[in-house]
Image (cartoon, rainbow, N blue to C red; front, top):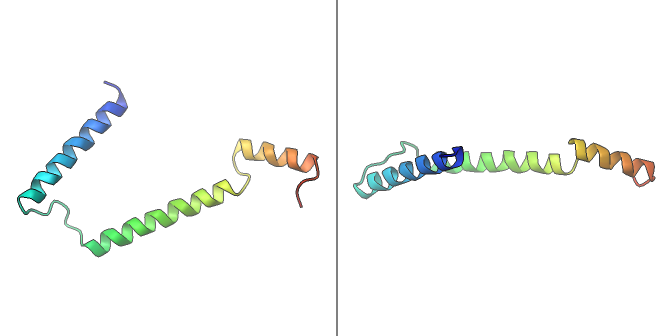
Amino acid sequence: MNKGTVIRTVMLILALANQTLVLFGKSPLPFSEELIEQTVSTIFTVVSSIYAWYGNNYVSKKGKKQLEVLRKNGLTK
């Protein structure tokens, strides 16, 4: 089995175990809804901020080459 198959299989087993616990009224995750919401919101903000910064700046090798071409052609400020 390749790495992706193993990861998907483990995630499926965890999801099924979680669903079984929920079915029997057990809370498998000892977190409040507020904490989960804040965590998801923070992760979304951080990821989207990094993506926006990385996408709008010339920080990758490809981006640096693009900037060089733009400068050679006088297309930047």
